[in-house]
Amino acid sequence: MDSENDLAALLRRQDGVISRAQALACGLSHAAVDHLLARGLWTLLWPCVYLSAAHARGPRVRVRAASLWLGSTATLIGAGAAWWLRLLDEPPDVLRFAVPPDRRVRSRAQVRVVRRLLPGRRSIVDGVPVVARAYAVVDAAAELGLRKGAELMDRALLSGRVTLEGLQRAHRSRLGRPGSVIVAQLLVLAAGGARSEAERRMHRLLRDAGVGGWFADHPVDVPRYGRALLDLAFPAARVLVEIDGWAYHRDLPAFRRDIARQNALVLAGWTVLRVTWHDLEVDPDAVLATVTAAITPSVGA
Figure 1 (cartoon, rainbow, N blue to C red):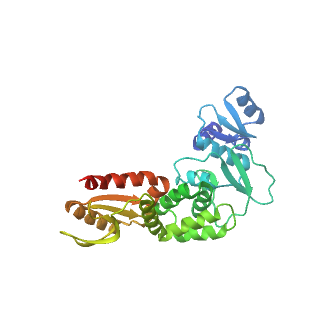
Figure 2: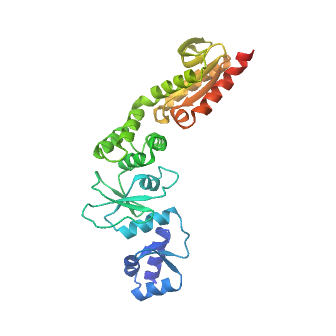
């Protein structure tokens, strides 16, 4: 009975995935495992790795099965690691695992194996060996590219689960690997460059579209607030475009000051639009359409 309970508990913990070695450790014989497979109660996922018919297949099953197949020396890295650490909402189509350089194992469908010595300590998260968080974020950002990599890095920093210094160290440890140039760009943005880059993009977007009547860093005196320096203002239309970088740089005191300033501007008759680096990277046409729609009534008046 204890063996049966141990087996049931293990299957629950591992989303229904189990290896033959684990089943034997719970008291099953090789013949008993083969019998479960023959009856369709277990399904073969990878060599000597099975899924109980009582559990549905899903992303977590993919990760566990690949990890059990590759063994304890394999470490989940990249976007798969970021997802397992709950820093990404969706898992990648292809999982990546790092193994020691002397291991001889080949990649298979949806699982890519790389031979790599990993820096820092790995951790066991829900039973799966996973690379350190900072390395997972940097490696995933290199895999995802500039746009999605920026979203991941911004989110991870904002959550406080990684630090900028930790990401920089992780980047230095993987210099020369694919995506290093993208990660270097992202770290410059994370260090405060996102806002200035967003300002340059916004100015260029308006100039290229032939939109005039705006001033950058425009000073105004706002009743019940005082002097305010506006990021990008259309004084004739009384439209202000506030340009932000990444959410990581918006701490609570700054957020409260921005709210007080914005409320005072709205009461003074200004329309306030907020634009972020992410907006300009993902859909600059939508940003331009919003701004032109806001200033159009005054143009036609």
